[in-house]
Length: 452
Image (cartoon, rainbow, N blue to C red; front, top):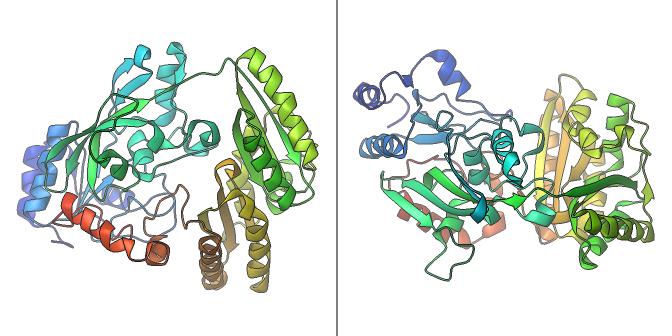
């Protein structure tokens, strides 16, 4: 039932969550956007539950009346993941922001989905622990629930893994309002199907997580980092693979193409050599880092890498400015982005194709990302007149990534922006995905219009 949710449903919601339902235009407008520029639809109502029972009651009401329901975190996603496309209810998890339990002996924490990533790590720091998957520049915005919905990764995933690797258990509400507990507090289990793994990365289309048990890592006693310039993307890809192949304990390996480096120099006057580069970090004990960093430098040099002079000595302060630097090249233009995943060795081919495909349309593609796990982001700036050409470049680069054995999305999810590639990537397996969706959400009310 959308657009125009039944007034009786709105009254029932207000009875369930008195003072925590809104049909104010400003709230509806805010809930219809995320950090992308993708179009959605304004919801009919926004609600702010505080507990699992309240979420379950709202979902049951939505299911009984066939009202679309979209769960929302901070709205920092880049593919329209939490934007409603058929109105209905937006269930905003921002007020479910309790750190329920910290268990240092288990290296675990229990949280509600509205806990903000950076706030969680500040809470964990006195225990010598942290939650490793990092949303980068949105760390002060991104919520744990949103990260779980997208299976977020970040710069440190080459060592610690992505979000799915850190979710041990979850309390979830299915599309009928049924409360389920998935997983357990064990590190390893060989019991039953891994339903929890389906939840992570499902973008709120299967169930809504209301409490999560997360595995943590110890804060490294020492770390070393630096930047290295390379003659070309092939040398950078070789260096990345060698770092991993030789067992060097790298925590991060980030790639910036020369256009991206040039944009950074223009924004901040960093004076970096305008060649493809890697930003590398190692973690460990003082002794371990003392051994690992020279070994990493040797591998990088053997592949043709030259140390960069990084202003302030902190490459991550520069890395966090990449998007802003690219957008500053053409104020007022729109950003068309792709979030590709490829085998590491396919980087040179992808860079070459990006150059040719974008150049043929007189556009520039900037490539950067978490090369240690094969994720490459592509940003294309385009005026309104160039928008269709930029979208065609994106489509061609997704096709190139798929042809190289990759994926249309490494970490941003399908949302609205990537859903058109689902059939091409998954083929007949998409039928099984739809069948799984029907089991968890038989009414099709949870975040409709996403994934495919």
